Image (cartoon, rainbow, N blue to C red; front, side, top):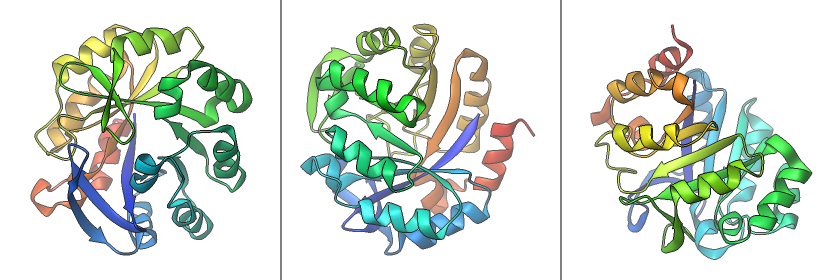
Length: 245
C-alpha cells in the first residue's frame, strides 16, 4: 500500500482546503518545490499534485509548477485538475509527468475516458469525488453529477479500469478520520484497486486502511494531516506502515 503526499496548488502556492470549499483555503508554502523536496527526503516515491485553479477553470493553470518539481526532484508525479481534452493529456504526459488524473470530463464523457485509457493505458487514472450520500461531484467539487459512486464504479470497471482515486468530500481537509464503513462498501462493490483520500487525521486511519489492503486499498493520499502540526502524522512512519514494516 503506497502513501502519496498531496500538494494542492492555487496561484502557484501550496494550499489546503476544507471539504473542497475555496473560501476555506489556507496557504502553507509559497514554494511547492520545497514541499516536494521535503516529502522526498522523508521517503515519498509519489506526489499527488492537484491544480485547484485548473479544476475550476477547466485549464491546466499550474502545470509549470509540476514540471519544475519533476525537473528538480527524482520523484513520480500524478497530476490532475483542469485536464478536459486529449491535447491537455498529451501536454502533461509529454513533459515528464508520470500519470494524469481525469475527473470532470471523464465523468461527463465515458467515450473520452475510454479513448484516454486506450491511448495511455495505466498512465491515466480516474478520480471519483463523492459526497455524504455517495453522489459524485465534478468541476472542482462545485457541481453534483447525476450518478452515485457505485454506478460510476460499475461503469468504468467494464471499460477495463483497474485503479481509481476515491475522495470523500465530506471529510476532506477536516482531519476527522475516514468513513471506514462507506469505504468498505465501495471496496466490496468492485474488484478494482482504490487509492483512498479524504479525512485522514491520524496514524490510526493509516493502520486501519492497511488492514483493508486485501479488500482493494492500494494507496492513501494524505493532505492536510501532513501540513497541520496538530495532526502529528510523520510521513516516514506512515510510509513504513504502508509497506508493512
